[in-house]
Image (cartoon, rainbow, N blue to C red; front, side, top):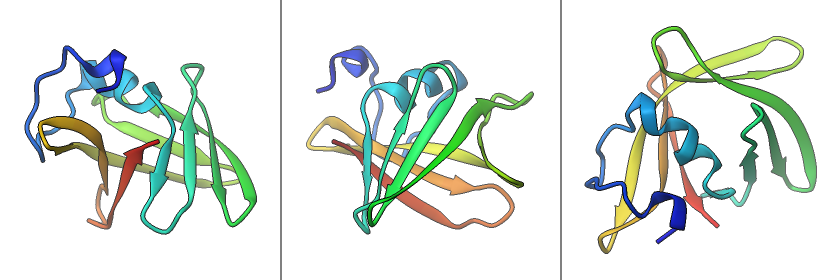
Length: 109
């Protein structure tokens, strides 16, 4: 298990609590089902790479303690986060966009 997550005890599908969002996002980089990758930096910067194209954005916690991202020039979205647990180990996060319900899974690399 990732060292920074080893003391977090959760089941598959459990919501990521506000207190664990920062560590869940920055524990490692993510790879998504379609092969894109993303890194969330502790500073609030994020880098998304898809088919060799790199996009830089920002991430933050809103006033309700939810994870949100901003992609210049104007795209902003907030997400509920849920743990992906496989074989008793935290393997990644499920991101569900608020208001739209669309979701995607990111697995730790």
